[in-house]
Length: 199
Image 1 (cartoon, helix red, strand yellow):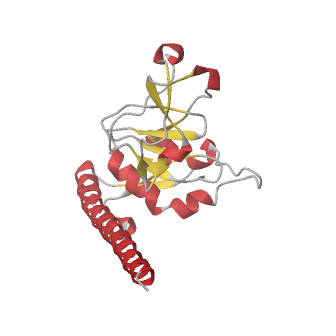
Image 2 (spheres, rainbow, N blue to C red):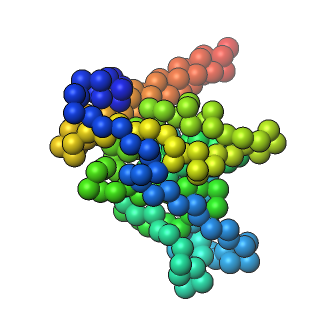
């Protein structure tokens, strides 16, 4: 089940440049001297895994030193803009709020036209195309101006909600299957190693 299969059935879909229906913000640079053992958490590219934000291996800072920084809230969509993770998409499914560094982009849609989860699934559907926008060989990076040119199909908010909800459920099923596969591999290897140890 794909994002594109839903859109092809919608006769009322309109196409916009992503930059016309969504603001894209880059994070800020954090000096290591600003890091603290606790405080306000900072998202880096390593915290974008399995298409979501993960909270392991976080850095922290004093928010008072970064009052003008954008904040990632629940449901916000982010992307790694450069490096080996270039083009990775994530969504904040936690109840925590985060700052984000200069290697991460945040997508804030015009909510009169676009819901966040629909935007998230759209970006996932064209992740390969997004990665092709990367320039530079040593450290590949994606320019915000190039992302803004991408054409996004925009349906009514009601249709967007249906599309996002259906794809949310589908992705959850995929995650469960993947988790079970990993569990199967673990126990299979455990049994094989156990049988070898018994000889």
